[in-house]
Image (cartoon, rainbow, N blue to C red; front, side, top):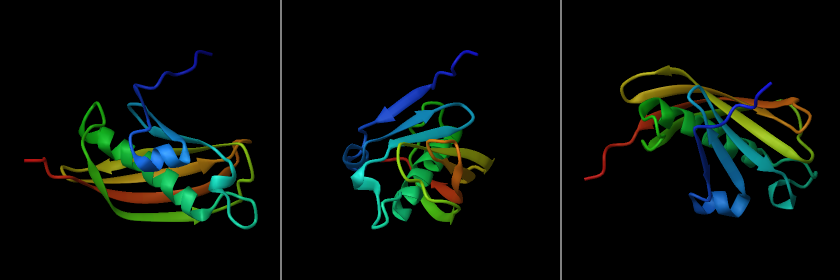
Length: 137
């Protein structure tokens, strides 16, 4: 089976991306945020910190929302709400968040997300709402 190639790969775009070393793969139907866990990403128990789950879900869903407004995912969006459900602890290796648009309007987009650990175990889910940013003048 041929591996699917992303339309766009976004890395090092923001200070947070550079600091935490995560990468966004933008596809027409979803965005995947990829992270290789290291000690920058863990909590006191040695597992992925809850804030990192939230951050990669927000990133994956946010890029999916942006892509729903513009083919090149250049439309800026703001997070209106983000809900995260923590299901299991990710302990090491590759972590992947997948964000998909569930409903898009003219200015508001609703998304669903999932986070998988290196064994493809579902470790978190989330929902998010994004608002289209006004055009810069």
